Image 1 (cartoon, rainbow, N blue to C red):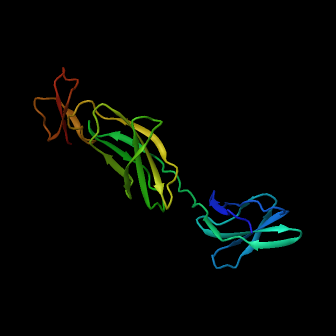
Image 2 (tube, rainbow, N blue to C red; image 1 turned 180 degrees about the vertical axis):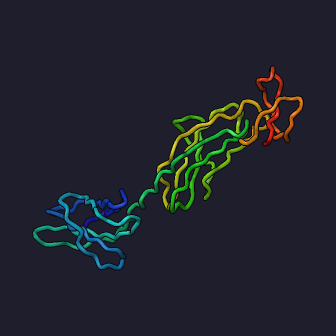
Image 3 (tube, rainbow, N blue to C red; image 1 turned 90 degrees about the horizontal axis):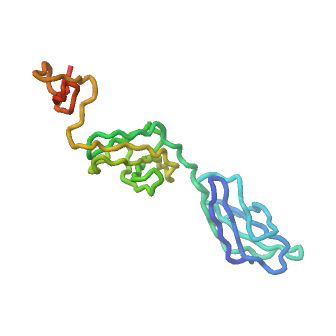
Length: 219
């Protein structure tokens, strides 16, 4: 029987089976089963010492045995080996965005992917990586904190469904250069002292009012 038989999943639909040559063999018969207990059915033949089994189901375990054919007779079967086809890769997240919130934090968000088990977020100081995982979440956003001021960070996000898919990105954002409170989103509006006629939103930054700081007011 052929020795050194191995099987390896190489795609969602393909498994590669390999073995050592048997002296005098004219060809080999590869048998396949969905169970280690059989039954084993001929999946194909090969003249050499490898066979690519195609058209299989994704994420499925298959079992194999190989026999050599010499002088018109089929020899004994090899020991059983198994391999699993790769799962189908999840889709890539869309609308990946990164936005600086302060000198120490950046918000990352993306659109939800139907059926996603979770998402992983990775970060780097370079657009070419290396990227390090910073989060694993079921949410479609993540606040990255404890960052350095005035620094560009690059982010990727990927779906995990048993296997990690191809990441979206990278996208980048630059943390604010000064550690003042961030300005509030609309409908807050700037107002120049003195005085503000509306409640102060708690943010102050340089304005066009002759260099005088302004407050961001609600309303």
